[in-house]
Image (cartoon, rainbow, N blue to C red):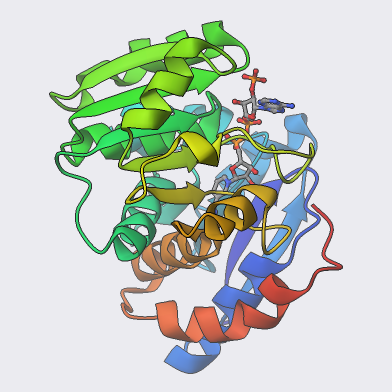
Length: 285
Ligand code: NAP
């Protein structure tokens, strides 16, 4: 029996996850396939119910369904509950479906590799208040960041984020306007500056003024299409260490793969398989 994992979302334009997971299934000798399922909102509940069957290992979940799927699974893990987003579901042997979040540990693994140290004790500035920003802020606070300043275009969205995430760690969490003085001040103090908006992907430009950053600050842009975002380019031009979101994509994929199959250590296989797609400047955002 060929077992399955399907990614639920709409639209589903990218094939990165298909390429990564199918390469890992092949390398691990597992008879399974990863497929895309573009669904209308009223089809999501049925697709999840069907994944209780023995031929399923689990599901991936992407926009716009990362919040709503929590209602349709049997259990949501505490971190995913705290973040407010489920981006993967694992089918346990008894058929129960458990929602979890791999963006948060994927971000931590990727960002600590660029930092070459842990997040603990850092002052962090984050642009964004959406789903990805929730995972980023949760991770930074949980990992012991000293301060996290969140700047968002719509300040109310960042305030809602703060209300949900504030208890994740003992560091100070502050919400500011993305274009305001408070964000500039936090940028000047930051050891780590993160873009968790779609700017650089859907909209041109960048959210963080790299000229304000300290010479030892690290820039992490969650965007990975295009391969070198304007923010990453500007940071590198200033001589700063900077990375796009490709390693986070790989790390979160490897974490999910291990949950579905019990097989760890597939990040290298995934990285090699997805490299051509990540480097392809013609891939659409
Ligand atoms: P989302 O929930 O739709 O949130 C979008 C965010 O971008 C919001 O904070 C929004 O601000 C902001 N934004 C959009 N247009 C803007 C503009 N013109 N100026 C300033 N801010 C703007 O999206 P998401 O799921 O958080 O994803 C955000 C990015 O992270 C995407 O590029 C996604 O591909 C990337 N991501 C990468 C990974 C990875 O593994 N590398 C994982 C997850 C997400 P408002 O609140 O004001 O609308």
